[in-house]
Length: 200
Image (tube, rainbow, N blue to C red; front, top):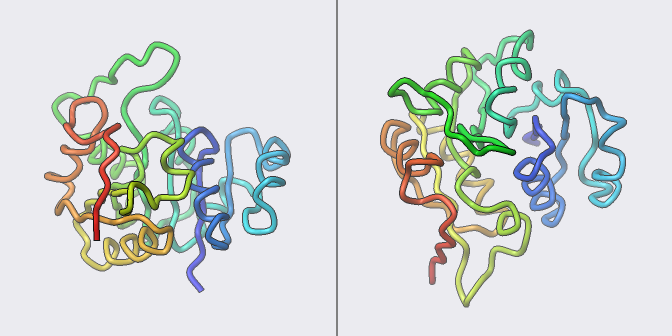
């Protein structure tokens, strides 16, 4: 069985965990403050979600990372080799309270993120929807809420696409990171924060 880890227990990480729990999919969630700080969060998602250390969450087959942009290097430093495992980049280069865009020097945020997880197969996903839309039932207006994803490894994208489908969303492949990463990057891309619904 594929294991799932979540690094970051803020709005997006928690919403992803709730979506997994709603569908009976087990996962581990971690933050910088330690498992004890997540007691109340995991209690409402029992028995599917467990609180662990960042090191433990990082060992999963698929790891979603959703951490404030400035804290990403610290959160991902010192972890064991990724060895081709799938890492979902759910980050945006902006953070509270000022919401001032980070300086990316002409690069895409996912390109910078990829440098922090050498050896991983990175898929960009789960960053463009508002957390409250990610955590609730994706069946909406007679269709399925859309989740965009992109990546440079076809096999990794296929696994993330299968997970998106299990969660009840309509996954749409935007192609390579150079294309999809630009379209869904917030701020700057045209697709974030829009509630698209696919009618089957």
